[in-house]
Every structure is written in C-alpha cells, then in structure tokens.
Image 1 (tube, one colour):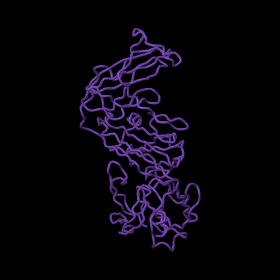
Image 2: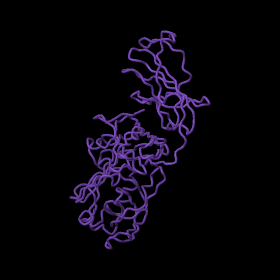
Image 3: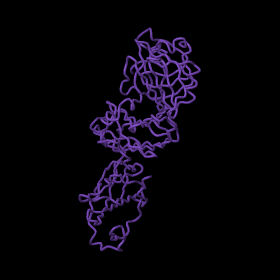
Image 4: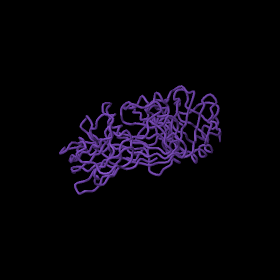
Length: 421
C-alpha cells in the first residue's frame, strides 16, 4: 500500500494511555527476598554462621547512614545505605514511617543500598536502621531520621510499553519512554532506577535512543519462550539536572509466548514463517517500490488493527495521497510500514514491488498471520534499498549485542547484567 506520514502520539500499548493515528505505508519517520525488618534485635556474635549469643554493645561499631540524620527535603526516590569499611556489606535495613509502619524494600544485588518497593511519601518523616558487617566480621549499626521533600511542580512524564498479564512475542523489548527526553548527563541516574527481572533468568542491558526519549531493554538473544518479565521503572522523585523530577513509578509483569518469526527476502519476494524454529508457512509478498522502499532490518510488531483506514491526504507529495480501507494491519515502524492485506496487488506479490513501503500480502495470508502474531513478534526484511533507521520503531534487535550495549548509560558485563534488586 502507499506511503503516509506518521501522525498521532505513540502506539496504543503504552501504559501511559497514549494512542496512535493510523495512516498508511511510508518512509522515515530465584526471587530476591524483601528486606522488611522488625525492630533490630540485640546484637549477637557469629563465627562461621553459628550464633555465639549476645554481643557486648560496646563492640558494635557505629555506621554512618545515608540519608544523614535530620536531613530534610530528600527525594522520594531516596535509597538507604551505610558507610562501611572496604570489604564490608550491608546485611539488614529497616525503614519505618513516623507512625511506626514498616516500609517494604529490597537490597540491591551488589549490596550498595536498599531500595524501597514503592516511592516514599512527599513531605513525610522516616527512620532508617542499617546493619552491616565489616571485613573482619565486626557488626556495624546506625540510625537516621530524615524528611522527604514537598511534591515538586516541574516533572517529566513517562510510559512503559507493557501490560500486566499480557503475552508478547520473543522479540518484545522493554520500552521505557520519557517526555521530555532524558539528557545524557542524567541517564545513568535514571537507568539505575530501571529494574528488570526475568524468569527463567536471562542477562540483559539497556540502550538509549539518541534523543533520550526512549530506552530499550533486551537480552543478548530473543527471550526464551514462556519467560516472565517483571519491570519497574522507578522514576518517581528522581531529581534531574534540568530542575524536573520523575512523576510516577510504572510497573508491569508480562509473559513471553511461543517463538514466532517472519523473515522476508526481497530477492525471492517471499516471507517464510517460523514457529518454535520450524517453518510453518511461506507466502509471496510485494514490498516497497524503488522510490518508496521497505526498510531492511529486524523490526517488531508494535500494533495490530483488524480493520482501519490509511489516510495520507496530508502527504507533501500529491502522488502519495489517498484514503484506503485496510484489513489485518500490523505496524512495524513509526514511519508507517505495516504488514497488511493488499488484494489489489495480489498479481504482483512474489513478482515485483509496488507498495509505498509496506509488506503486501493477500487477504487470506494477512488473516492467517493476524490470527497468529502477537505484539513483540519479530519480522526481518533483507535486500531492499533502504536500511532501517535507529528508533524508527522498536529497533532494539536491529543491532548486534556488542553495539546494543554501547547505548547503555552504565557499564554492562560482556554477557549482560543480571537483576539489580
């Protein structure tokens, strides 16, 4: 089908409740335990993990807690930590409200701090008790009472392209979105508050798009089928250098389904469909003609519409203006490329390219695909005149692993990072 200009906001799966105005084909455009402690017990000695009974309180070393005692105007994203000698580690953290209620949270896997499970309240007082063990086994303990800041007036908004309890394809990246974009100098602080856990465990990494409006999280390879992904974009209260603060935390727990891949070869004008690694169907296609070529690269199904209208009447090129009813449309780029039924081009499918960038298939084949695909299923197109532009859709898988990791604001191990909490 023909080219159209991207209009509207973002794709409809955005938890932020965004919507997309459709047009037509186009160009460019083990579980970590929660550390919830009761009142700190009397100190006891321990050698080799065996309790030796009460310890003389005089042998307990003071520990400096952060936030400091009597600190005021702390962000509601504040984490609790303690200053320990080299080689020491935090072992227990208790955070209570002024009314004595326990605040849930977890220690970071590197032991650097304790992260509340939800944003703290604005303008509230908290008391933290922190216990750590020094390199020689000595016990360190400290307390601190601090007050959080009032709710700021200037905030950034955010989105998360995942829904709770929804099943996605194996190429579904975790996509976090920010308005306005996060400046480079602030991305490490924000990324440190973007938590992903997978079951079964799979290492991963974040990658920021150049303008900081989106960040993708993926593993070195497609997700294993039946993976559970638990995400928390803990943005609420994060102070940024532009004077804004994060607005809310966003959470989702989603499921990855079976493996379903579509591969399109421009040379043969055919699509080969794989399910769980086995070829289940091939079909003829017609891609974008030379003046409006389809993008070559690995894309992801972002949105599905059983019936819609492609309206390109605002296109600057009169030859690309039209209004057409479309069936079984699956969006794969922001610039307007779709897989969709094109009964008008059946005679060309498998023979020549006549579309304005979309993957044209017969109505029968479009319906067959539509009934089987999920948002997050990958489609790879090879051999066209144009390469897929970074950020033109969920392009996380269009980079190899080494290049993808370079987009992280924090160091990433060669094999990828595990969960932070």
